[in-house]
Image (cartoon, rainbow, N blue to C red; front, side, top):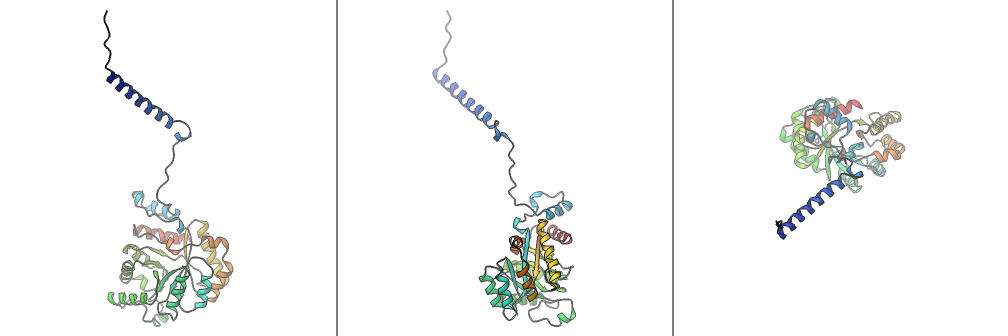
Length: 314
C-alpha cells in the first residue's frame, strides 16, 4: 500500500498564514464597497472659491490656461469695502465715522493739519490706515494749488521717490496707499511704476481711486507685484442725499450679485450724516475690510482685465 507523503509542518503553517491574509484582504475590500460609504465622495477643492464674475471673465479669454494658475480670491472679498478719503482736516467727522463700528480704511492726506492724530485715532479704533497720496490732477485750477506733498510729472524718479517717502513719514501706521486727485499722473506709466516700486519695498497695497477712466495705476501695481484694488463707486461725488442713495444702492446690488465693491466716501457733513442714517443691519454685515478686496499680484494682465470687466458690470 502506498502512503501519501505528508507536507512538513512548517510548510502547512506558512500556507495557512497566507490563506488567512488573503481572506482578510478580500473581507476588507468587500466591506469598503458595500453600504452608504461606497458612494463616491466628492473631495472639496482646497482653494477658496473664486468670485463668479472674475472666474467667468478669465475663463473666456484664457480657456487653455492651467486652472492652478488662476487667482485664488478670498470669499470675504464679496461685499462692500469702505474707504474714507481726505482725512486729516475734520477730526469730529472722523470720530463719527469710527463710531459706526464698521470696517473702514482711513486714508489720510499727509500734510493735513491733523494727519498724525487722525492716523492715531483710526489705529486705536482697529481700522486700517492708508496714505492718501497727493498726485497731479489734470484740471489747471487744482494743479496750480499743489502742495509740496504732491507727486507730479516734472519730478525725476529720485524726486518722486523722496517726496513719497516724506509723505509716508507724516502718517503713522500706513498699510496701503490710494491716490488723492491724480487724474493726470495716474495716466503715466513711468511715474506710477516708481510709486509701485516703493509700495513693494514697504509692503504696502495700492487702491486706484480711478479719478480718470484711463488710469494705469492698477495695471502698474499688478505688474510690480503688489496687492491692489480699484474703486468702483464714489458715494458722494454728488452730496445730494438722493444722489448718495443711488450710489449706495449700487453698492448694495454688488452684494446681491455676490460681487465686490470698493466705495470711497469723504468726511463731508452730508456724507457722514447719510451713513449714520442709512446704514442698515444688512449693510453692516455686508461690509468688509478693504484688505479682503485686494487682488493677488499673480497673473497681472488677466486680473487687471477682470477688474475692468467688473467695473463695466456696475
